[in-house]
Length: 379
Ligand code: CAA
Ligand code: FAD
Image 1: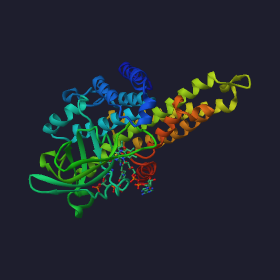
Image 2: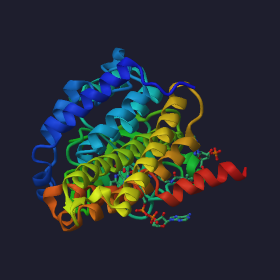
Image 3: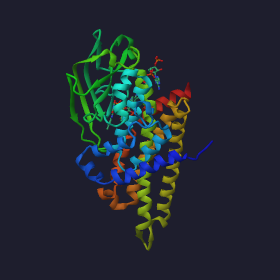
Image 4: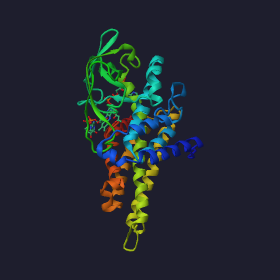
C-alpha cells in the first residue's frame, strides 16, 4: 500500500486549491444569494483542463487519474459546490459515459468539446415519478426507424440551462422493463426540447437545476449510446463512478468547514483563552479531523480501484454514504464552533451546511447507497 500522492497528483491538488481560493471564493456568497450560475468559473475550469480530467488527450481531455479528479473535486468543493457539481456531472457522468460507451462519431462530435470545456453536459435520468426507482421511466423513446420520438419530462437536471449536450434516459420497450431502456444524446435547440422551470434550492444555489420537457423530439438513431436496451446499465455504470465524484465533493465540503472552524477557534477567545483550548471544542475538532481523514481514505480507495480497472461499485457507494454523513455532521459542528457568527453568511459555514445536505440525496440517496452495499454484503 502506498499512501503517498504522486508529484502530478500534488500539482493537480495545488492548482485546484489556488483556483478555488482565487477564482471561486470571490463572489461566492453573492452567487449563492442570487442563484447566479458560476459561468466564468466553469469557463476557467475548462481552460485548466478540469472539465474532462480523465478523458484521453486523444479526445481533448487531460488524461489524468481518478485520484487527481477526487483531489480537485475536494479542493473546489471546500469553497463552491455549485462549481464542483457542474464539474462532476460533466466529468464523471457525461464525459465518462461517452468515452466508455460512445461510438467514434459520437466521441468526435460530442465528447471533444465537452472534455475541452467548450460545452457543458447534463445527465438526465430522474423524473417527477422516477428518482430512486430509476427503472420506472415514464419518458418514452419510440423507435421510428431512423430516429426515436422522445416524449416526457425530466426533473432536477443539473446544468439544465447551461448545458448543450444532454444524455437522456428513456423507455423504448416497456415490456422489456429495464432492458427496454435507452440513452439518447439530445442537443439543445432540437425541435420540441424545452428547458422548464429552475428550482429555488436550499443549497448549491448557484447550480442551475431545471425541469426539461420533451415533446415529440426527433432524435437520430445514431445518437443512441450502446446497443438497443443498454440505457439502464449505462446509467448504473456511469453513476458508480459519479458517486466517487460526489463523495469527493462531500469530503471537500466537510474539509472546508473544518478548516474554517479550526482557524476561527484559534482566534476567538472566551473566558480568557482561545476557544480551542476548551476541551469541548477540541473534542469536536478531533472528531472532525478523524472523520474527514477516514472519509478521504475511502474516497481515494474507490478512486484507486477505478484506476486499477477493478470493480468499485460498492466501494464508491460506501465512500459516498460515509462522506455525505461526515459532511452533514462536520458542517453542523462548524456552525456551532462559530457560535452566532456561524449563523450569518459572511463566515461561509452556514452555506457549507446547506450545501452538505444535497450530497445525501443526489446520485442516489443514502438509502440507495445502503441498498447497493447491503445487496453486495448479503449476496
Ligand atoms: N453496473 C452495471 N449494471 C448494473 C449496476 C451497475 N452498477 N447496478 C445494477 N445493474 C444492472 C443489474 O445487473 C440489472 O441488470 P440484469 O437484470 O440484466 O442483471 C439491472 O441493472 C437492474 O438492476 P436492479 O435489479 O438492481 O435494479 P433496481 O430496480 O433494484 O434498482 C438501484 C437498483 C441501485 C436502486 C437503482 O435504481 C439506482 O441506482 N437508483 C438510484 C438512481 C440514482 O442514483 N439517480 C441519480 C440521478 S443523477 C444525479 O443525481 C446527478 C446529480 O445529482 C448531480
Ligand atoms: P424518492 O426516490 O422519491 O425518495 C424519497 C425518499 O424515500 C428518500 O429518502 C429515499 O432514500 C427513500 N427511498 C426511496 N426508495 C427507497 C427504498 N427502496 N428503500 C428505502 N428508502 C427508499 N437527477 C438526474 O437525473 N440528473 C441530475 O443532474 C440531477 N441533479 C440533481 C440536483 C439536485 C439539486 C437535486 C435535488 C436532485 C438532482 N437529481 C438529478 C435527482 C436526484 O438524483 C434524485 O432527487 C434522487 O435520486 C432521489 O429521487 P427522488 O427525489 O425522486 O426521491
